[in-house]
Image (cartoon, rainbow, N blue to C red; front, side, top):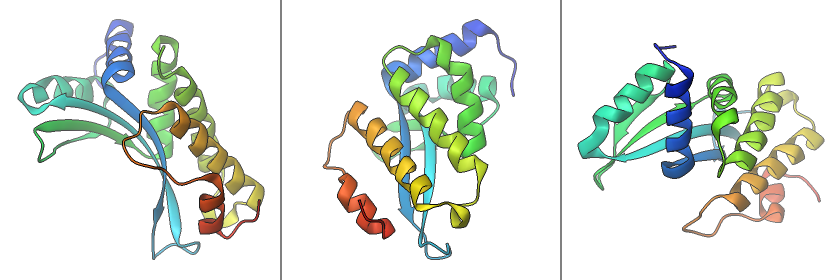
Length: 159
């Protein structure tokens, strides 16, 4: 990880609280035995004119990648169970608005990192779905998200 102080981490955590998102998603994947994968993401958004600040955050954290969207917004994304977990553990003491999402995503990362997807039980998968729904319920959403029943059906689980 990059050169950082607790002030740097507190600043970036505050930025995430205001201009970021924590996500736990289920993505279709044809090369997976189950036909899907779970994806964990920390995303920080900024007008592309100020992308340099995102580059500084990436350097401080020592993880992630930056991409520019077509709408003039740049994103710093941290993905992967271990990287997201390690980063959230740094941010946790400083978060206020995203405290519930942070705690939930930490729990999800720990579960997802503990065993391979093919070895997960129906109970494990249901826990991950519950984590997804908690995060979803605390996030601002611009489009309708899938319900618990729809997610269970997609995974071939019964309620």
